[in-house]
Image (cartoon, rainbow, N blue to C red; front, side, top):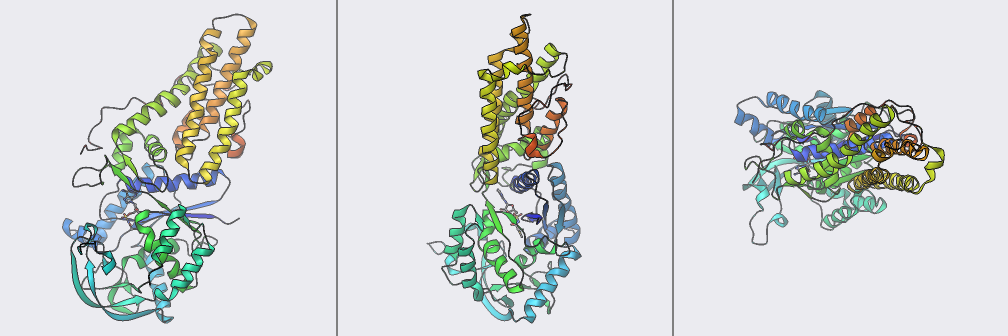
Length: 517
Ligand code: MSP
């Protein structure tokens, strides 16, 4: 079976990691962990994009050499991955020799094949975006959109890659691979983009304008333009690892789908004679407190500080629960705290506390065997039926990247379990010495423990630590496959549970990690 090779975009290191970077890593991690649970072998790559004007400028502003600057900021991105429990197998930096040699070799190959030529270019240039602009990029009133920053007209000689030549091939390729891009409507955007003739792609920058890049192997007066460098990371990281290429899944944000990932990248690979990636997922963007995230205005979430204050799993949970994959979403402390309190603390946390508490109070801390005859009473039967439905839907939803709904279902099952506990009221049964009540007490304690175990076993892709903690306090260590662990059984009979557990402590008063607008 082929290894499932999944990647994130590689982040620019011109600033510290923010919530958008954190989200993409967590989303990709959830997919990677889910696939592993389903039995796939997964290889997960992430990393940083270190060349280009912005990094060069940021380093200059700080008065340090670009490499030293990259070393420092890359370290923060790596630390964020560790902090957020991202299960990546590799972390690539585009300044590493293993990457630079591959970029250089591929460029030389394309040059030898006649796919790259030199030409004079005159055009409007955006320094901020490091790209030449076209007439169609103007706003109706003739001005340039703000995202381009200052736009100037320049003339220079550069190297171009014959992109236009592959336009028909790409259109055909997209038609033949309808599921190339998720969500599907994004594929239509690509086709629409391709309804206009493509320009060849400028792949170089004169050294005097940009120094911080990979030198063109066939002309030392130039460095490689960022996309030709950055996109290659997906390949350079695994070229020497048999059986990984082509990538199965590139996870990226919607802003870098068209044209870089959906047009340049497949065409570059096609020209190189390499297989193209199987699919691309384009996620939406986070705003904060209803407005664009911006460090300068303080409307910014520092993912590591936030995780320190509220918990890694709580942050992972919120991002995945709140955002429908592909759509945009808003992050606010209020909404975070509302989900934290209602779903994590008062629902899941409460069930954990009750289970431990009741088991200790009425069964000496050991999960009792349920009474055979009582298992077919209505409340028990209903909860089991809801479990089977929840589990099957959860898997299907995750397969379709509908993680936010999958989590909603999982938590609805936790809610139903809490309701079951209230209905059975073990605290009342515990006061009775009637054999029938005692049988019901044992059954209800066994049922709530089993339902909690099962509910928790839906969560490890999103909240790996929380699942481990719940398993731990239930005295449960899973054996066998994940799918096997989702079968309702009596796995906890005889298990010794912990006395107490605080999974989701009451949050401290909000401080500066989320700035108010
Ligand atoms: N370096 C390029 C990508 C090269 S991939 C071969 C780049 N870097 S970036 O740092 O600007 O963005 C990295 C990723 O973070 C992108 O996928 C981008 O969409 C994502 N996000 C940046 N801001 C975001 C939000 N506000 N919300 C969600 N994701 C966002 O582009």
